[in-house]
Image 1: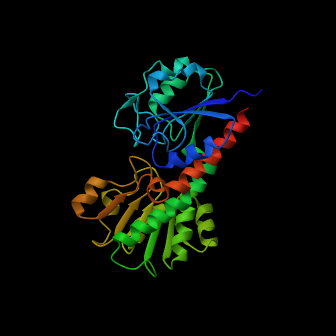
Image 2: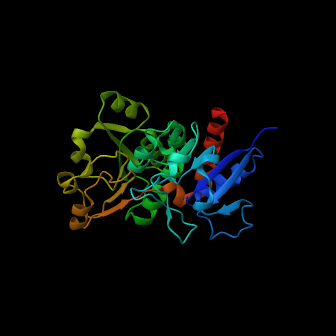
Image 3: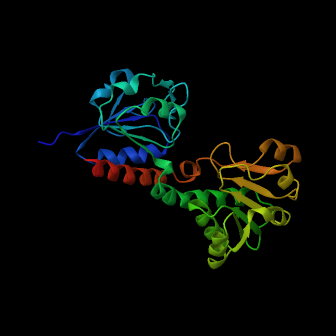
Length: 293
């Protein structure tokens, strides 16, 4: 008789509802939910419980939120009114070879898992998850552009910074909507790649020549790209959407002083397509658990 995998899902957002639905369909999983008391007890057909009722030494898999665990041990859940705090010694009780999933790496997780023989998987740092998520991210950027731009997307000048997993999809989607897309990159090879894909590739050292005439700039690079010098070149009706993780690539304080319309659009997949984003996580996590056996 095969023992069921003991899985604890601690916290989460709307994406996790789809994740939970996927995992409970597997008869080899026994799932406990922590931080879901606002949901009707029969909604998911899974045991809802409190953190102090979970024995970490019994768990084979721990699934934490996309936001990870904050420095004070707090775990976010939009389905709970009560704070969820993981004490510093909580991970000391888990078994060797337990799989710990999180969206991102945080200093709390690094500190508490560095000396543990566990498999730690930060989902958002994986190529497969990032590539799948690039589609709802790009669609979310399109939605924001339509809501906040003062011109049509068709025939507008759009600058995309970065040609990574998200940048590629963003450039493709906006081009198909009729925008004139220019892509700023650091490497000569990426300039050639952008040109081969039908975009106007340029080196980031030339950025201000493009910001002067753009209607929309979308940043995907997680370092400061738009400082005072660059922001001073934008026209008053330009829109800046920053898709990069915190702290982003824009001097938001100075942009506000200039009266520029800037949006730090974090977590777009969860906002615009939580079902799709949850299914992406579910499929990857389910496969990784299977591969780990």
